Length: 149
Image (cartoon, rainbow, N blue to C red):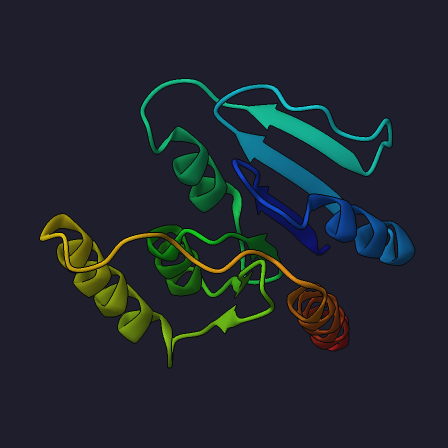
């Protein structure tokens, strides 16, 4: 059975994910360090985890299998889930794979160092309609691929 795990802190595509999951009747786990409001739907379950800073990430990694999808912008979490053979999708529709997650981790380190040195400011560009559309298309494609397994 396919499950979707949302790394929910600051995830901009939760509502879109709920709609797609409902269409396919897929269980969604919304995971965060604190309770968040989620739809009253038996297919959507809130998991508020307490403990360390990475408690939500750790919980997701413990649960995820090669039949699951993880929604996250956290590159280090993406790396851990890809190593467990899960499908990992960023909120802007970019899938993390064995082929690209290593360079994403390296780029993250580089950008973090540049920000620390004062060379870079700001964060990623905000979500727009094109990114949401790309996310929805890629999520649908991943679900179709997993259903064929």
